[in-house]
Length: 126
Image (tube, rainbow, N blue to C red; front, side, top):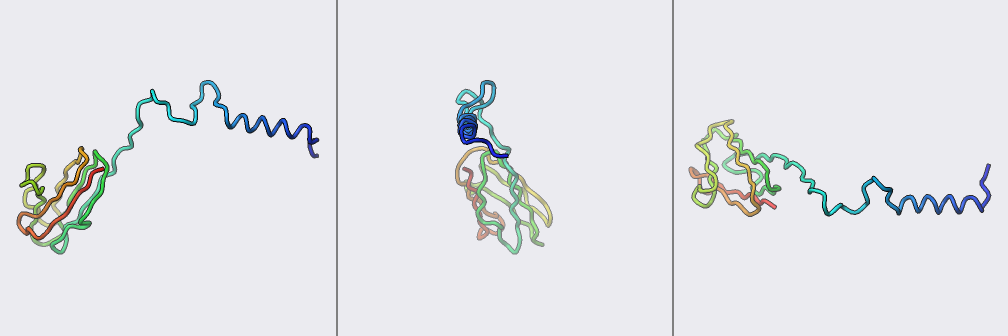
């Protein structure tokens, strides 16, 4: 059974109005400026040390992200921030050893292996 045209138009208009008008007690479409910001938990990141290199060589993460380096080489390696280890510095990592650092501040953090200085990497926090 079909609705008469006279009845269909008001029903369609009511549907459009319901979509466009917020209902009291329900959240509006726009973000509430007084509501606290919703911050997603940063996902941890892993850098593998293998074949005398850091992989990936460039890691991009959000603030609050914990980055873990895992040595898969047979040789020991370190993870040392380019500021001479002031920001972070691991002990020598043997095979399967791990080192973690949580990046809380935005910025670019270059690092290297102090045993093999040609091994370099970068973490960008944004």
